Figure (cartoon, one colour):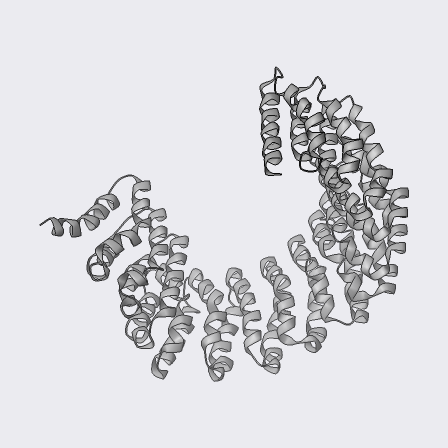
Length: 587
């Protein structure tokens, strides 16, 4: 009797929890399905748990979404792939619900299960599910069916394959736009499983219908199908069937369709090959770069470097560069920002002369743009230009603009400049850096924004690593230590942070002679924040300094701080003292 109760208990608990009014309790029980299935065993899971889940009519989308996800990984709990078909029934029900995310998850789980099923089981169990969903009275079922055809088709015998192709064709002509959208969206996956002979006839016929749909939401999904189908077709078939469609789409009355074309054009160029792209797609791309809608120009501008790589430098200069010049002064800041994020990549494509003559003026105008994101995008890609035109010309033409941006009113622009300084320094060399950029690096240590001060301290460390401790001792350390007397405590804290970062690069001798005395003196500061930062810095210096210095200088200072009236100062001082003791013991 006790054994029988133990067998009934898990399913009884599940039933109670799934009928509970508390959604969280119902969710938790669904997420524990695998545990319950293990307790029940494979046979009882198939005969009791799965039928119960099929009949479960929970109206909360969160619960149904969790169930759809769990069932996708349930094959091991029902006895393996031999019995995977029992999971199809509850998932079929979930494919018909109104909430899109639940249907999508159910379709994903069906695909995962179908991919593991044996061919005979797909024919006997999976294909009937596809056909029932495709013939569903509610559009939700028909929408879901579009996502599983590509799993069912390869395993079907010839007669069923013909039937599946016919059904998919009917879904592409469904009265409901949502169904046609789903069919258009999944056409590429389905086409990849169809035999080559049917691809040119049946699938291309379906595709042509979708490209002429009266709903722009269907046509824009057909654009995605262009790239997928283009890769499946032979190059000559792609040119004959796909390119004319793309050219027409680039002039579509709906801006959303043109936007999709601008996003997908590079992938289509890859499918069609460079020769045909130059002939057919360059005029379409130029049209998109000059489109009336800013969103289309943004998408097109973001692909300009990729597109130019397909073309010869001469053709890019003749056809694309005039559009780029226009976009650099576009009325939309987002268009200019999209262009700025990729335009630097055009330098290697066009070569040195064209970059100097044509691109540099555009770079300079974008570096002075009123919108900070535009300036930011140019700064972050300067190294691509340096590789092409060399550092001398880069420093002459762009450096004045960079120095100006170092004092930009937007802190994110200043931050981007700081992060670029070590790279610029390594390219310019030590002499040029000392003349032009050294003062800037010190100036940032006193910035009003914490992120800038923090980045400035890290920047000094990276420069010391780049040019070596001797250079740092001559050009950085004296100027940093001067600032420890700054009247504002936040700047004094930044100097302490800079010291802790520079110490490992400078080595024990310089740290002991130059940096440590400054830190020790700061322990007498009247601001508690400075004092507990002194304790933190001393903790980092312990591993660099000799034991004798730690005993004579560091520990007495920390002991004094551990008796400070401020609780935070005492806490960090004690932490540092413990770290000292541990290091001394280990050594």
